[in-house]
Structure formats: C-alpha cells, structure tokens
Length: 167
Image 1 (cartoon, rainbow, N blue to C red):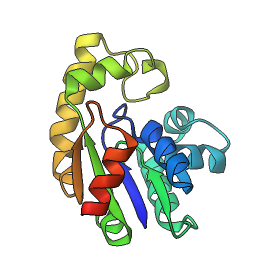
Image 2 (cartoon, helix red, strand yellow):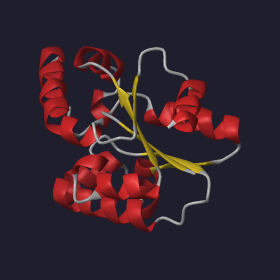
Image 3 (spheres, rainbow, N blue to C red):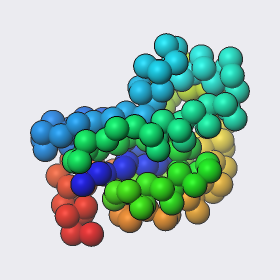
Image 4 (cartoon, rainbow, N blue to C red):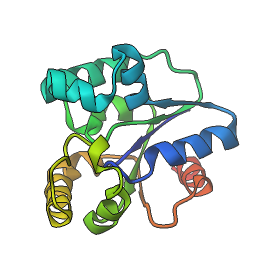
C-alpha cells in the first residue's frame, strides 16, 4: 500500500512520514527531497531560479514517475495536490491522508523556518497567517478529496496507520 501524506507546509508530513516508515519498516519518499536530489539544489532555490510553473511541472513528473516500492509512504509538498491531476493520480494510486491544521497553528510551526519557504519570504507574522488562510481556502477543495482527513493536533504515526487500515 502507498500512503500519500498531504496538507499545508508545516503540518508534519515529513516528520510523521519518517515515523511511520521507521515503525512499519517501509520506504519514505519525501517529494521535495527527491526534487532536490534531481535538481542538485534546494526547492527554494529552484523555485526562485525557475519559477513556480517549472517547479510544479517537475513536481508532478517526479510524483508520477518515481519507482515506488509496493509499500511506502510519500510526504508530498503542500501544493502538490493542487496542480495538474496530481490529487486524482494519488487517489488512484494509493491512500491519501490530509493532515489538517488551522492557519494559526501552521504559522506557529513555520515561524522559525520562513527563510526556507519561498512562498513565505518577506511576510510579517500577521502576513503569514493571512497568507496561510488564503491558501487553505484555495487549496481546500483539493485537500478535501483525500481518502482520510485527520487533525494534525497531537497526531502520531499510529493514528495515521489505524485510520488508513480502517479506510
């Protein structure tokens, strides 16, 4: 089984993905890390040099062409489900889990790493919350197509595994 973790940046996709992979003894693919391996640069740098359109195209190609193990967990980028037919493709090829958090909770989690997040650079603390609220509204229709939706507050790897097994 393939489990695709989706949700806004900072919701815990990579952290929880690592814990699930270790607990289950399966491979973790962090889509952003794979893009960094392919391009030889950071996502932020690639985004700045090539622009969002080029990044989203590469992201979609990487998502759909990776040689996945039969059982694995995939931590996607926050925008991955929202471009091309990525969400439809993930739903057809595995179980999607939306890790849901409020804009305020996400902003709190992201406050120390804003420099690494190209979409948040240069924003004030209030501006980050407003930006996240707007993006959550825009991305909601995609995120809500997930097979499973879980609150990110206090969420652990066992909660995700249980929810996927029950789905």
